[in-house]
Length: 477
Ligand code: GUN
Ligand code: ZN
Image (cartoon, rainbow, N blue to C red; front, top):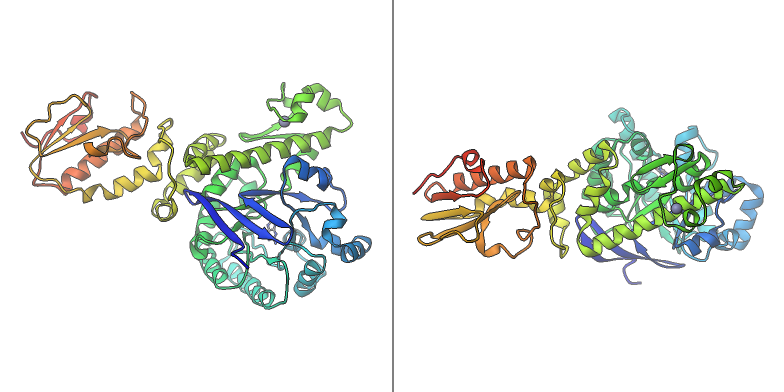
């Protein structure tokens, strides 16, 4: 069998891929709407029409309902739910984390998933919450890993998921990732992160996911368990998450909450429906509020928005502009911005993965000064070797006679060789009026360059005022 996961395009640590299952191939990143087998708010056949290529349901709920259990075994999961595409099943581990106990053994629930022909089965892991003692995180991880080894040895025809736990201990997450990488699994969900997302702890989320990814390596498909709010798809995809599951579309609808890529609105506090999905086009806010179908309609809107954002993420990856999307999305909440900054600090890791052909770099917010390209240049500027008279200028008409080297100057890069002016990333479109973050980085780079070349004689001719003084002025002629 060819590789079950194939990567087609990359940007940052994100990628567009293809995951092959028994019920077809899906393009990733993909959002799997969560289907409650008891009361689906949107029937699975309609989910497919709305654009969901793959869904996820809970095998434990089916297993605990005698009538459903028999039907699932006799007819198979796909016939039971009325969905012809790939279906992933969860194991009840989340119920375990909420209720503390479930009455089915790990082997039983895994074999049940195989029996009902799940496309991706999940062994019963222990979702360790954030901030527990290291001892607890370690001992629960060990139990999860023992179950994973057992699961990996079973006969199966579908794909098998390998949850990665380890609480908020980055080293445990990385170790769990390394452990997983050597086992014959197909999909690698990062688990135990729902409490982080509920508490807006995106910085910790970035630490946990990047640690797991480092251990796992870049070639494997990663699922971020419980990530259903469209606000975080871009950030999660940028870290290399390929699968997402959304219970949010239904849970929020039940609370009259309207999802957008910027956050969550309360219907009663809104005045308009600012969206072009069929629900928002066909209803006014009042009609929606008064409709006996309100929850269903709202669930549909929530899902449309989520599926559309996933397409936006894919388009951005394809275009090499995922960072720009991140900058926009991370304006939604101050903690999202913390998450983005944390990811920016993983520059050397991103650098090893980021191989996209980029669209032109647009500097439109101070976070652009943290872009991997900028950080990469800052780390390497001291490798530029200069002798003799060197001119640093932001004036393309400047008289360059008598200079052995001419460097252009553009915040946030600072000085760069003039011959690279048309080359990415130095061909960046930047504002005429640079902001503080860009100038600070440019000045720092200029100083580092001068320090690395003590023998060269620098002349600095900048039209922008005040920067020469900050660099330390001219040291030469
Ligand atoms: N759903 C949300 N989080 C988790 C997790 O950590 N493990 C499993 N199996 N399901 C989840
Ligand atoms: Zn809508």
